[in-house]
Image (cartoon, rainbow, N blue to C red; front, side, top):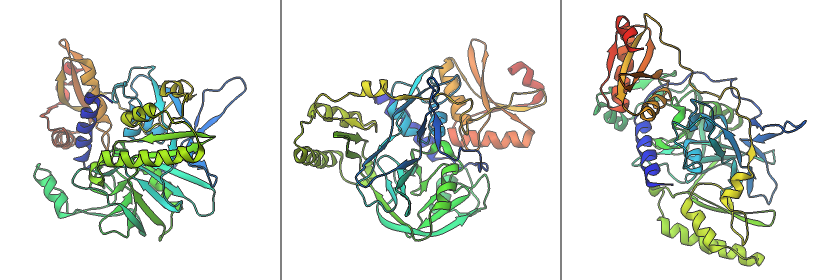
Length: 441
């Protein structure tokens, strides 16, 4: 990943980390079989798993790589959510695609293959390094996996062994003093208690851990999933937490680990998967790397195979989360990508924002003006992917591009959205009354 990509990703995480916004009820909208349709060949309709994978006793890797072409207006976040991935998953796997403004027809690699964490396969195992939760049901030989968000800098998610202590539907959020002060410093005065609903950052399902102040819960800002954006809690897509909440019982073990480098045998081939270590999780990058290389040498020695150590170094440096074979003469990342299953882009992506057109009589907001069309479209995408969505579009005018938010039903709603935009993006905005709308369309 280039330095520009990393800088942009970090800046984006900081924006999402500051948000307090909403979501809507999502029950019944997500496909219950957790599968995606592959572009069918003659008389074939195969599928690719995204969440649930059968698991044998000695199996350490599940899933398969896949690819899908983007449509006009898609973002990588839209594609990630539909296929059970987080923002970081899909962004680091596609470093040459602009996350918020992919070109139509871009070939998007879906990293739907996972090396399981080196931990007992019991209850829930969460690997902070790849921001992914693995659930092992008691009576089924399978693993169920979901992307998550974890604590941002200064609000780390703790490691160790704990359990689910309490399960709550429609939880209330009692705003901690530290978070209250954090928002107040930016002029955003929070209520002391946020009731269940679209403004509650806990979403509609929460599982309190036997660790003070830490939960696994939903979110009202689903496009932050797969980032370090929380105040230490573990956040999930609303549709994912709803399923997990029903499957997990009070007392279920939860094991939180930090394993940035993973290895697995699959069909006599040695694979490794690398992620950038989470700095706040402890253990320096060099130390983690040396420890992993020692493990890899032992694994290869036991089977008497030859490892391509130059390739190992490339995979560790790439840190893109894609399981890659590393024995001598094994396929490289380009070959893996070329051989990935081709999925048909569905008619609609789950949760993708649909923005209503502006009509005469609607209120709107002039958010910003750009000379560059891509920059304008990036701002539009980031507005529409808030929680709840801030409706927006780009409008060509006077040789540049305006970003117009709306429609809004009245002056009061317009002022409320203008306040959100000022707080969340730290830019000044200008409400547009309905009588002025025709000159700004």
